[in-house]
Every structure is written in structure tokens, then in C-alpha cells.
Image 1 (tube, rainbow, N blue to C red):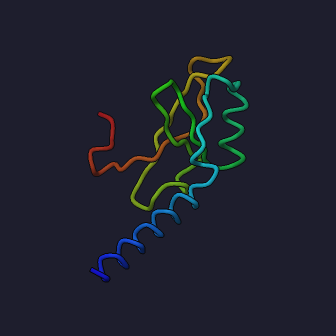
Image 2 (cartoon, rainbow, N blue to C red; image 1 turned 45 degrees about the horizontal axis):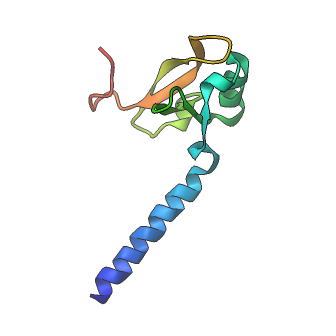
Image 3 (cartoon, rainbow, N blue to C red; image 1 turned 135 degrees about the horizontal axis):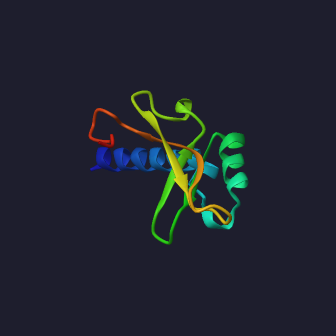
Length: 103
């Protein structure tokens, strides 16, 4: 029983560390509250951000592939903003060889 308790504690600590590392990326800003230039500027300055594109949808957007995991690639993304319904703000990361690509 003691081994299970120690292992569970280690898993919880690892999970907390991952959440702490997410930091500002974990915050969701509604894209519709920003202008296109503001949204794109956030991505360019910070390298990554999470934008909510509706009440139930959100995604992480990145400046370039260096913000993705080693086996991921990027694809361009457009989001609705206050002044543009189709604002190009950057890219999202996806796994091209695991069914994450678009046909």
C-alpha cells in the first residue's frame, strides 16, 4: 500500500508541475475581443497563446514550429476577431503521421 501511495503522490506532483509550466498559455482569451493586429501581435511577441474562438472551442496558436513537439508540424489558422471574421494569427501544431493532417 505504501508504494501505491508514494507513486500516486509522485504522479500528482508531476501533473501539478505540468500545469504550472503551462502558465500564461493556459489562460483563454476570446479572440473576438481583440483586433486582428492585437491577436497576431500576441502570438508574435509571446510565441504562443490560447484563444477561445467560441463559447466552447479554443486552441493553442503558435508563431512557428519551434513551439511544437518534435514530431509535430504546423498548419495555418484563421480566427474571428473584433475587426476581421477570418484573421490569420499564426499556426497550430498537429501530428501529420497520426491522423492529424487535413485531406
